[in-house]
Length: 153
Image (cartoon, rainbow, N blue to C red; front, side, top):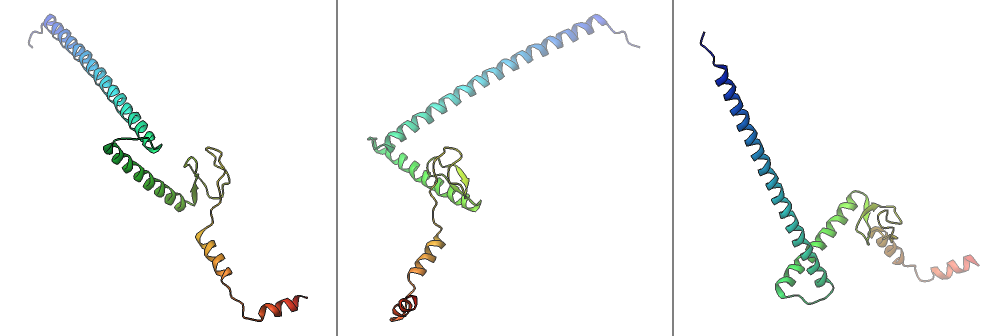
């Protein structure tokens, strides 16, 4: 059986533990720095977003913006309209409707929005309008009105 030098073995284990400790500390420092970089990038992105929203609000309020910004703002307006249409279509498929004030999805029978409290005006279904038009277009034969009036008296 070979002779084991426990002093050398102990030193090797101590060196390995020290190396692992240093690498772990370095790893943690790197992760902390990566996290700080990520947080700083998120803060910059939020600032860009806030800046963009501020410029868009000014555009939407009719304040003058340069032509490049106006083009981007027009694209945003168009996309907002598309989003609104899609949300309304989705709500209809779910048997719900969209609050005209806060854009929240509410139950189809709701009179008030549960999110903002606004009154929701009941919109007539296209079929109801069509049926009303058909009823108005009913033509009576000449003389029938006189017969009905005489029968009522």
